[in-house]
Amino acid sequence: MFTTEATAIVLSVARTALSILSIVINVGSRNDKGKRAKTRNIHRYAIRDHHIAPHIAIQ
Image 1 (cartoon, rainbow, N blue to C red):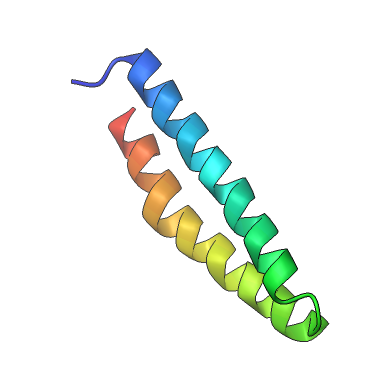
Image 2 (cartoon, rainbow, N blue to C red):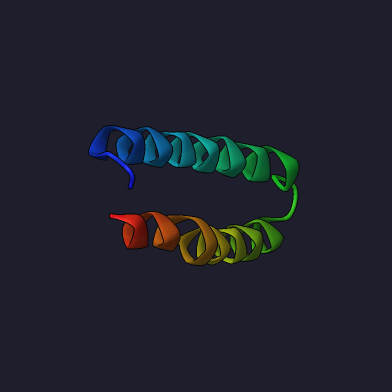
């Protein structure tokens, strides 16, 4: 169903959202280094499981 161009666009949008999210996490939790690392790991796994995996499945 999906063309490779559409898949590439979706992946680039997801990658951009990921970078923006990581910047927001870093700025928002700069005071507490332990909390920052924990939050980053939680979001990394959540994004990997719920966003990147479906796009791989589409391909």
